[in-house]
Amino acid sequence: GVVSKEEAESKAKEFLSELNIKRSGQQRLSSILDYWLKYNQNLSKSTRTKGENFWKTFIEIVGDIPVSSVNARIMQKYDQEMRVRKNQKTDEIISDRYRGNNYRSVRQIWNYAKKYEEVPEIDIFATIEIPSGKGTREAKFLDVSQIRLLIDTAASKNPIHGKSIEIIYRLGLRPKEYANLRWEDVSEDKILL
Image (tube, rainbow, N blue to C red; front, side):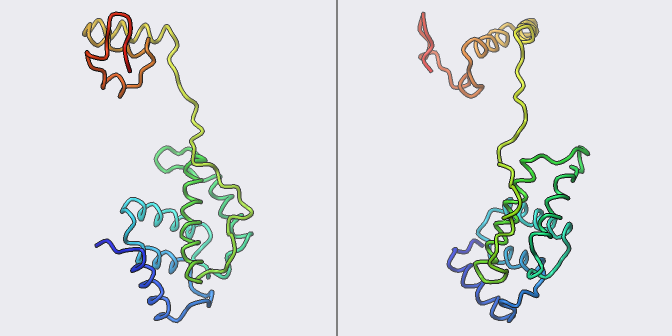
């Protein structure tokens, strides 16, 4: 079930004191993930899965080392590996967006552990530039001749579809805006959006 933030924090403190490893710095990176997963049950399954996968990638690259061993050199190794890592499905180098999401997730879990004094009070990403979450994909637009071909092709199959695409194009509508149009929005000389 879902637990409140206060309950999760209380359980985390209790768990850490039971294990008696607090502030030792000898616990492994994998134990930090275990704490984070166990005491953040209020997060969505998707967030937990992404966090878990990103942290496992971090461990895969730097090793399941003691948290006290994490330093700028280790983080540079992580960054260098992430910059050349390939997407298993496409065999292309992973995007800056994905890398940035990975870094932010690892930092979130590290900060969670820092909160409970399980890791050194350092910013592990101080020497690494975290890419923005915004994609760097180029916007792709159809040119006028491609739009005309699209309208004509759609009209040849169904005249209503051709007119629909032409209205969307000429008015610069988003698909949702077009879908929400009603007859009462249309008058002889204008369309009210």
